[in-house]
Image (cartoon, rainbow, N blue to C red; front, side, top):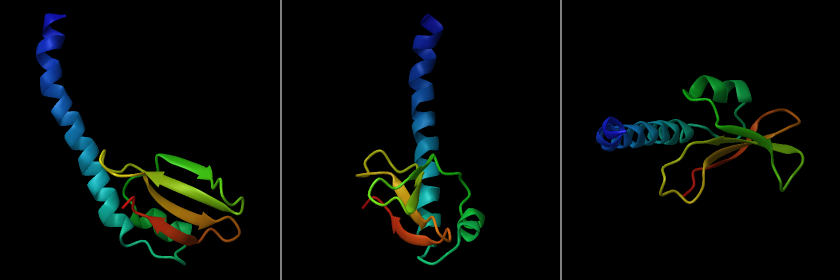
Length: 95
């Protein structure tokens, strides 16, 4: 138990930094995603897999890829696709 108490303060900053690096990488790559791109083009561009894929609650003809964003962001980064042809409709950068 004492060992855990000593190691925990050392591990937490490292975990937070790795999460932030992933979020920064997602942000840089998402800025290159444009409406009309195909899902295959997006997959080639993005280094990280989406954290969540779900149907858009506001429109049953769309689905959303959600990516990790920084802890201070208003929301997760999102790419919204059409179900019909799997092309990008919109990119939300949680700004």
